Image (cartoon, rainbow, N blue to C red; front, side, top):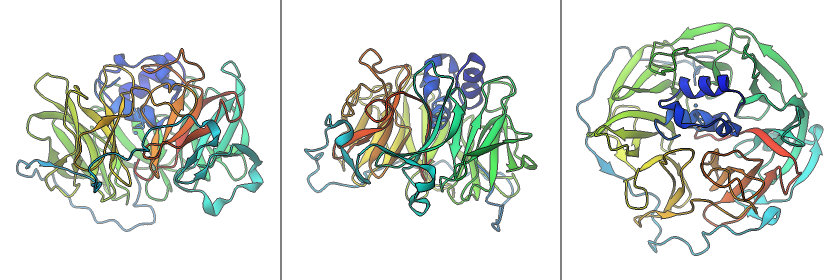
Length: 460
């Protein structure tokens, strides 16, 4: 999960997480996904899911729209689960590639999607059949003081397409999988949600919707609205609404921090001690997934390539340590992905699957944690606390998204905005395996500053 104002910070962080007081207002210059992810992460300091998310990062309903859904009813609690330790994508050498260090290429870098070469094209030139994972919707302003800016759609190779004029203080909530639509929210007390047609540059207000909103999976034919007025996501709930704002389904209390499975069949949300799974057709509880032994609260973040949920759980012994687990939604035993260590004393709160290895996010005291990379059975090694390679210090090292081994990150415009709970000005793209990097939007690409952005990321 990227907003402005104390009220928006309180609403976004409180709705999908715990201990929101650790999050500072300037963290809200991140994408909605990152905000969502951070607020879900207790004590982490978004996404989006919060939130990010932001984030991302780090942030659900309606496969019942146009899809036949079979849902089991009842709350079936499995027996205590066994723990597995996961080794992912082994590298035959057992060591990280020598080239896996970011290099200061500016906009001359290259990613898995091609060379970075910032340029601007009109909206009419958007190659819609090519739009998909790794494309970015972003709100750009000529300066931080600018009140009106430009809504852009940006390719992974930094070709930007100007969509329309837009207030720079809106929250960019989500972008559809085909990149043709985006959701924004006004910063005033109305919290009005608008849907933008990126093919035409026009927008419309969606009535009846004012919570933390995102598109449903897998086709974005409906909206998921997180409704919470208490500041505790266990007391809030989800509502699935049509694109016209009409109410389709109300989920039970406790579902506010839920995320949809990629096929849209289920919603998974954190509980007091583990996870809860609801059927997306009826909102009925399907099963409970208990927390691993020694752990308490668990927060679903995203989806692994094999369909398991990427979940971070906090230890219940008061040590303030978290680790990431891979949870089968079917109820099988979760597999432990990370371990706290001298490198990551507070453990980890998020993970992305790479073509070779795993990108991990440490759990910091505030803001966004350093990035580590693990290749095969070797121990994780640090990529931080600040990635360099896009010419400037990162505003925070928690990616908004990782697509094709490339991390989409918020970049600060000067060296005074390094790490921790700070803002940023641009979108940087860093291939964490090869080190190729560049700027997609903002400094070094087209100047100005980026207020909000959201990445099409199938795992989030």
